[in-house]
Length: 590
Ligand code: SER
Image (tube, rainbow, N blue to C red; front, side, top):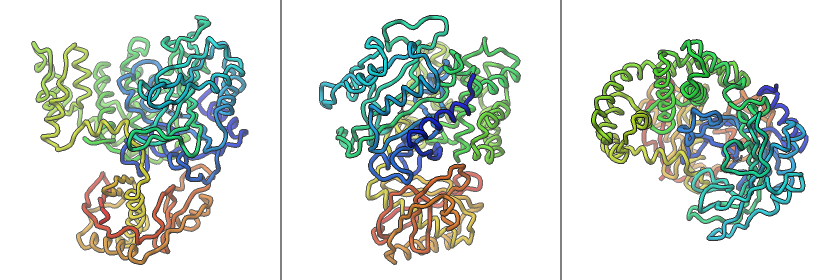
């Protein structure tokens, strides 16, 4: 038996011995990245460094990164897929390359985790003969062979870039670092010996490892260019490894799920063995919701808030199948114990539980009636019209995905296209564009976004000064090439006069043509110098601090402009409430 914390320690110790420094576990909300909703992999917060910016801790880093993948929500309910998971990862920024990466992955699996070599298989990039001209990855295959993986357990997967995602990873969004990858699989059945030959189609082989050889960067035109800096991006899902290490074929039987499952069993007075799908979905969705709320998101009808709403409401719907009500905050309780090493989770506990309860109360008001309505709508029908799906959404709070799922169970279709049209008509907001963001784009470091990023620093400093409140903290930042959006803690609406003054103050700094100073220092030093940032991290890390004269000093990964005069003129376009105690300002540069 091994538990989560022991596994993490083993991993960090091993890679530390190979020169890696531990970096923080970043927020689920990607900083300054308007094109993706959530952090989906450990590499996500590292894009600037994968593109060549030097990392303050050097060329080898590692961490445990919390991630959310929304693409897999429909898969949740089986034994291995989760919305929230922790990725244990290690990276080389232009330092070691595939031979070392593979060797260490193998050594960690065999020597440290003591996995049986006879139960391992690997896949490598099979080459793409068409546009990309990326050849098959013989070096990786040879390296695996040298380490003792027999030829028949090495599968060259064809396809890659233009065919499917077989052994080609990334970019995480539309553009950015990517490359061929080589994956390690483990034979999961306890009582059936593994076949001699590896068949990647056989689902009993479970992927446990992904070594990405980041040799390419995809550009805005969809072209794959050789990267200036060749990196290694290795990631492994902690949940799967933990299950394997404990010889459990079902991830939900491990100690990071069991307390939640047990709580569901207790509340519902039913057995997991007979209700696996519903209980897995509830446990998964509530765990994910706890982490999403902790990172500053509340349920809403747009973007991240919508994903959160969808997760909570789907959990409630499955709760109804089990016959339970008003349960979300109770089921959330064990999450705080399992993850007691997440300090922010403990700090935000009260608010997280409140948000869950609020959302549950809201949905409880309409769920029953909505289900009645749904049953009436589908009488003698083969398809639910867009108008009816919209009615369920608008009047009964059914996310379209819930309507789709209910319909699938009854073997009828939903006209999603017409639903989108209805939605657009009513809200001028396309769910498709929001859904597109689940997959697309990484932060571009374009000139426009860089300028807006510097303007955000000026704005935050001006807010503290004009509102005479040094306790104001940034709650979120979202920058597109057109505008900045800053969420900050403040209890009330700002007056017109205050907004004018803030705008004036920002423009004054711009006109002073200040050079932006970038320094590297320890977190401790940054704290002493009163830099703005989050200090409750347990990591003794080095950070970059950006200063704009004596006006602003913030811990930040950058990038920023060289001189404030590059910004032009700042204008506040909107001030509004974001959530309880949090205000939102949108601004532009002209
Ligand atoms: N980025 C890769 C993945 O998500 C490896 O870390 O699988």
